[in-house]
Length: 115
Image (cartoon, rainbow, N blue to C red):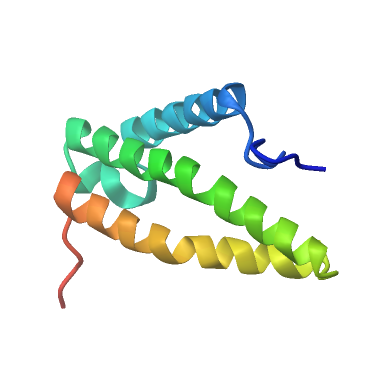
């Protein structure tokens, strides 16, 4: 039961958000250094790390609230989690796709391949 003024359980408190950002930072540094998804040859180290950090930090901000809210709203309406969870992830992935594209272009300087 959520009381007035309290954050829902899925939202988490400061310790939960600190862990989320610590994991996102570690993953962003790893992806930036290793050059995940073909960014190793496409961008220098500094912009590559910055781009991956931006993408993973925004993802850490975006996914937990949207997915948590969607799953909770679905459960209140009697919708099974196996239906609401994939839909919630797909819904949160729409803005994340645009953010990833912009970070790859503007921060890393990687342009799409033109035939």
